[in-house]
Length: 209
Image 1 (cartoon, helix red, strand yellow):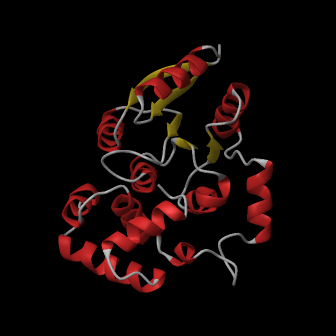
Image 2 (spheres, rainbow, N blue to C red):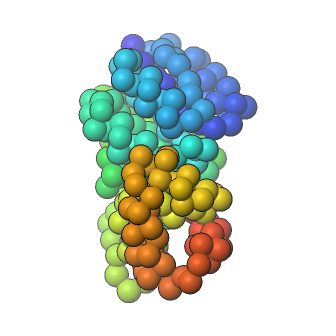
Image 3 (cartoon, rainbow, N blue to C red):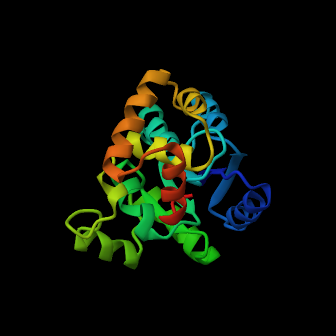
């Protein structure tokens, strides 16, 4: 029996995912959460086989939850289930430790296939993601400016893009405000931005939030 935990900030979406999981005879729904902090707290005392993780969470970035989860429970497989197309995030989250990546437009059957694949074989790669990996997406002269950001800088950009203040970002990532300020300077340099407003606009234009 595959033990599955669902993380998504939208209750209606969580309900739909839960029903899909519960329809599978070889899966058991172990719980749900709407925030990153909640799932990490639960993971301290619970063990699951597969975590279905949305990238857009209200309290911290999905990337941050992914890296913390892999450090806390490395044996738990993580499938990122998000509205963002593979071109925007998939290669980065795989490099950060995700075991699979699916957009929310995929079929219920494909979601179940992905859960089974990561639980038994280790990885689930869509045809589009395979193309991106083979083409070296995210590197080279045609890469988007944000591809030059480190994973931590990307986390900061995502949170700023969702309207968080630098102090709120520091709280969410559990780092000092001065650390966030350092990251923001580096992000502005790499993206050619002059202000936090510019960063928000960039995140929106790039489809990151």
